[in-house]
Length: 421
Ligand SMILES: C[S@@+](CC[C@H](N)C(=O)[O-])C[C@H]1O[C@@H](n2cnc3c(N)ncnc32)[C@H](O)[C@@H]1O
Ligand code: SF4
Image (cartoon, rainbow, N blue to C red; front, side, top):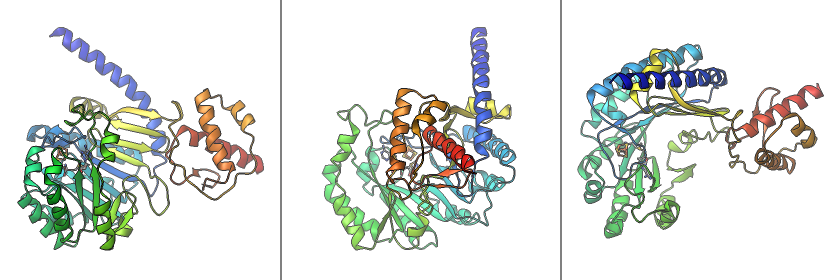
């Protein structure tokens, strides 16, 4: 017993030390939070264990959920203090299953970080449930703009096989309620279930049935077999090959015929076409990836030059928040670590005519791999393939993931800018 306590103390000491380092860099990164930044809330509990789920939610129980919410409130206060009055206009609540807890407890506390009367986009993910109508009424108080309903399938056999605690009847009732509501709403549908071929015709019929409710949006998910779920390793070792076999072209053709347009990864109709242009990971207006600040157990944050992940274990999340520290387990600071792959850079317009890569590299010692990567990005600049803006302070490259590479480019731009002045 004594040993355990010592070991725990030592673990905590290490976590504490590591987190102090993370904290310093993070506070600097957070100063770069901008208007288009997004607040992501991860409510980590769920009462299902779907075979296909890759999100590893924690099994819901009232005690742990209450304990989590107590500390989630502390996390909100901590960021409210760091961000000094900044209010997010874009919010996304996912999980887990956020509708297991009342909006009063999960959403209201966010008023310190969100101005509910001045929102561009506020999405909540919901698992179909019995008390759906009253839950939606509650959401209205906070001006939620869009509902994302996790339908996956209407087939009771598949729902049962996948351990989903909902049914065709419950889902149809939810669809009817949504169709009669003022919300923008969309459904998640999943393809690639085990034994799905047995129900092949049903899947087309159920798709048409969902469409008859006129959802504003549809996300198609091709089932990924990953280590985290029960599909991995059971004859399916390479999920990309497995996914390639799932053909949704016919479904997409039907959507097109009915006037749906694809925005990023969602098929959209009506007012959702504009709404979906600001998604969790991509801003279709500015063309850029916004910064994402994640709150809650396991929430991911994607800041300008770094990628972070909150603790999964409640014990550690509590431990850091009790010490008034950001409860992040990892923070990859791209300025310090390897270059994060810059794989999302597409064609652009402007030309960077004058630069000397050799001289630049002299002042920024890099590993061979980093050099190679930087060289290829510079060559994209030179060949006029990158659309960027630079205002003397911040370099913005649409459709580019944040990375050390961008950080170096930004430094280069800064030196060139001041040299010119
Ligand atoms: C966090 S879950 C949704 C919220 C809610 N708990 C539900 O299940 O309805 C977000 C979406 O991820 C998708 N998803 C989950 N596991 C997946 C997998 N293995 N492959 C592809 N998509 C997956 C599902 O379509 C799901 O609706
Ligand atoms: S898919 Fe949704 S309902 Fe199923 S286990 Fe994952 S989070 Fe829970």
